[in-house]
Length: 276
Image (cartoon, rainbow, N blue to C red; front, side, top):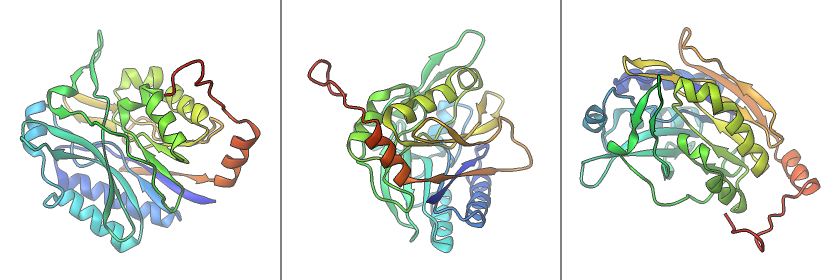
């Protein structure tokens, strides 16, 4: 059984501050014996406006946050999944991406968020991610890691079962949902959706979350979580930023997962409804 660590922090507009938080999480994950660390969406920065989101973005090749985290992954021989921003080709928007940094410090996988968060909640936040973010156009095939085959999704993708079902068909053992959920939507749906995606795909779900107040306009729900293929919550953090960034750990038991899949096969009737 391999140990996975899920990290939780409160990103600001300072990449160096956010890198410092993530480096603390790396050290905590190593101390806990984890074989991989999963960090939240937008770990590099969270800005108060679309204009500032675009102005802060840097290419991976020059981003002090990404370069610093690559160095830490190599130093500690710890693979890291982390959500970041990347510039688009025309420079008018950014990409909301998830990268996998292997134990050598190399970026070996990259996924761009498919579903963008455009929402207007009465009495709650109004967010229009599409005003500053370019949507992704493909699902990345699951890839081998020390904790199992990982399938990459991000935050709002959680509300759509089709991508996770596709990743399961392609061999995923673990599905990631690094996130920065709002507090109202988190209270209502976060745990329910994570457990549903785990149960229906019979896969582990690892959801690293932003937590606390990033600025005057944005607060995240937290409650980073690891869920088993049976829907059990194996690890969960809280909903407040305490003394600093935190981790939780959970065991990834692939033999048990495969046994469960064999004993209760989910055979979809694609002769009756469409294959999704």
